[in-house]
Every structure is written in C-alpha cells, then in structure tokens.
Length: 155
Image (tube, rainbow, N blue to C red; front, side, top):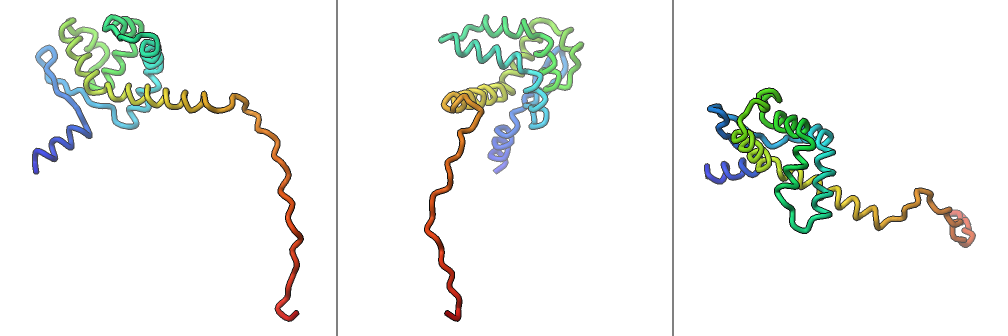
C-alpha cells in the first residue's frame, strides 16, 4: 500500500527535485493561493499562450521561447515562487541549468497554465453564445388568474 500512497501523493503534488549548480532544488506545483497570485502575475504569458494556440496549428518551440523572452521577469518570478530561489540566483544560473530549471518548472506547473487556458476558453465560448446586451428585456405582466373564492369552515 506504500507505493499507492506515493503515487497518490505524486498525483496530488507532482513536485520535482532536481540538481541545479550542485544544489538540490525542489520545484513545487503552485498550491491554491500561490496559484491565484501566479495567475494574476502570469496574465501576459497566458494571453500570449492563448494567442499562439489560436493562431498556430503546429506550435513551434521558438514561439514559446520568444514569448518567455518577452516576459522574462514574469517567468523568473513564477519560477522563484515555485522553487523559493531568489530571482537573482535564477539569473546567475548557467544556460544549461536555467533551461533544466525552466523545463522542470514547466513539467510541474504546466497543468496550472493548461487549466487556466481551458477555463478562459470555456468562459469565452459560453459568453459568445449569450446575448451581448447587458440590458435585460422588460418583463411581461403576470398571467391572469381566476378570482379565488374564500370559504370558511362554518359555511
């Protein structure tokens, strides 16, 4: 039963420990409150991902690299949130270690981005099927009802 519990924990918290520059670093999946903060921070990245997905049938790695390059500060802040490393420390990493860390971050937190993209798509689809007018139509009058008669227990 120990392996089943380990697998359950890995599914619930798919954290990953990697070696970066001789140091063990744990890349954690965003927990709920962190995720709320991360989603607010990542808005430009999410918008860019959505645009790439909507415009490209075949997503090229270069498009993702360019998007991250346009939002480097956000990307580093997200990795810092996930690892506890400072932005300065992340900035000092070699290219190889930086790419290793970025890939681990994406493996662990990719579902975070995917859920938000799917939610945004579902909301957009739901809203496109609704009337664009915020003004509600005037309600019709209540249906006519027959007069009610009163009866008393003594009648």
